[in-house]
Figure (cartoon, rainbow, N blue to C red):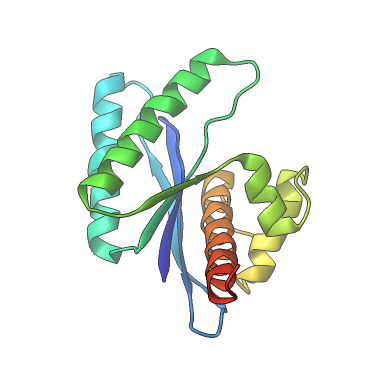
Length: 167
């Protein structure tokens, strides 16, 4: 199974592609960020994000798309921008018929590091370890997207196990 993890944002959207083999091992396919120019009008930034996502989807044909759920405490302006980017991500995935799952930041941290309140560095180190990378992935947005993809693969494996055991 090939999973496309996405950490949405208007200025920077992180993406990570992780494949799980039959034996359960995880393999990095690719990761990076989609950046939009700061001076560009909001609607053009979203359109650029949409086109870049479509290119990624057509190039890799993922089996699943995973997006981090929106979570914010203080900055409403940032939350609105992230919400708009999430909408573009969900639209692109839906147009290609790719099933979408969403996880909270706490679920991602718990799944990847074993601790729901893990800090960013702990999650990055676990992503590095789980994908057998020489260094942790950068920038943070891409590392977060890989963590979201890994989270889904762990959850999907568990759900498949539950179904197979008759639970």
